[in-house]
Image 1 (cartoon, rainbow, N blue to C red):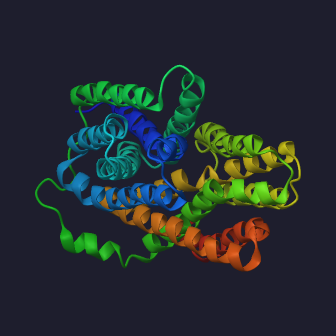
Image 2 (cartoon, rainbow, N blue to C red):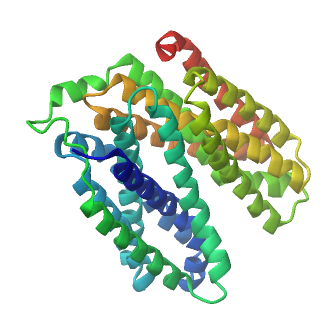
Length: 383
């Protein structure tokens, strides 16, 4: 029989690794660009290998954990991520670099989905959303930790050395995973392929996945386009513009800590509504931001408003698909990541046609579409 606390610690470590995997390329890209003398096209082509890996990892993990359990895949995905960091830091060949970036994304995509499914499995309906919310805090730990380490230590050590030590830390955690007893696989006697395929047509799962589709799109847009918007529409210096993004992650991280306690008594559906209102206020303020302080406040509010969506929706999925939790979350995350890619792609055309100044209005429009989906199925979600 497994013990919840060691398993939960394993999930939190895995989510930290995903935070590292998701943010590491953006953190070291300037150094990599200089090292390999890349132009903007070459640099952007490198970055595309990360989301491809994340998308593929998110798609395949579900059926594997439902059939074979969590332990071995957690060890393998953490090792692949560490291996990718090693490739990024040890080798000087561009093809190896591309493969290493893919491995980081692939391992990270598995870690993200698997840790969410694991926590959804080990806790009951009353605790699930709160524990998933606190799990999300560790994404912030990883995502904030890498830029912080690079910022503090880059004057003493090269980025390669820092990545090697990060990978070594992951390998130490893998040893911990090896000694933890995990839940047994749900479908050990054989994976029900027909039942899994039927999930694709399940109306509630599609609705929840659409909420995550818009949510992932919002997060991608805010991470990728906020600096461009503030640079072109305010007098904030470049260094301060980059710094404002930390307030977005800080808002998400601190709000998830608060939600860990709030969701123990408050109804998740109403927490989602409150979050959407806070996100709307932050987006309106962003439209009128002219100073660093106002931009930081607006992004902190936006981050706080977005914080609850993923853990609460993952909790809903865990509540409703207990026999195939991994596969259901895998489908939802795949749809969510498609939203990230598609909405970022659309934003490129929108900014070219109407200018980057329309960015906050697009955020509000996407939020409105997300709200329509949520309200259309509010009875099922409330239940």
